[in-house]
Amino acid sequence: MDNIIQIKNLTKKFGGLTAVDNVSFDVKKGEIFAFLGPNGAGKTTTIKMLTTLAGPTSGSILINGYNPAKQQEEARASFGIVFQDPSLDDELTAYENLDMHGMLYKVKKEDRKERIKLLLTFVELWDRKDDLVKHFSGGMKRRLEIARGFLHHPKVLFLDEPTIGLDPQTRNHIWEYLKKMNKEEGTTVFLTTHYMQEADKVSDRIAIIDHGKIVAQGTAEELKLKTKTNSLEEAFLALTGTAIREEIVKNQSMSGMARGWRR
Image (cartoon, rainbow, N blue to C red; front, side, top):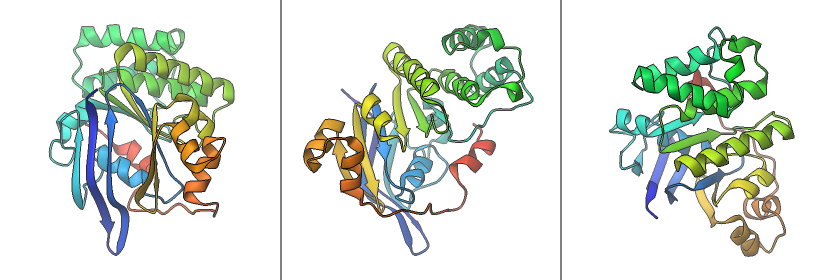
């Protein structure tokens, strides 16, 4: 199986702070890959570099064969992204939000109409297509964002805490949608989450980053075996420690970038 994401010796420095320190890992085509770490571990900075929001200090990244630092348009066409905080336009309808996204990605009008109907039906929002997003619940907005992320047939879908703040029922439904699309369209899913049970349940492989370095990689079972623990949460704590971490704010958060991110 080929690698859709290739990261070699990736480093990002902010003045005297090394946020990402010589990180290397690959993500295979079609897999669900969980990228986990405590607050301030370098997780968000790595995702910013993968999604063209920041350039690396050194090292290399390839997404679908493209360098995000030098081939931004090609790299962005290769992936979709669901940010941690909502990035929809509340003053537009569900249909209009997806239609605008399709236009930005140069999806042809007829293809766009067909794709929007398919995806809104898939996430059970077709009957609400003409409703303003400002009237949607948090779960409905998240489902709409996931539909939007799939609209242009991305090779990779980045999910930054996709189910944070949602009830267990909504989380389960969202993962049913995502796993089905992953299987049917072969879309690689790259996710971050603080829900260890979720990562254990849905991911094919996992990488854990701490203090800017990859401290472990493998399946959930391999990480449990390595740490002699019974759950992924216990394995995570064994690898990263139990001290409470504070989020380090560097430049602009992913949530803030979401509102201004455009192709």
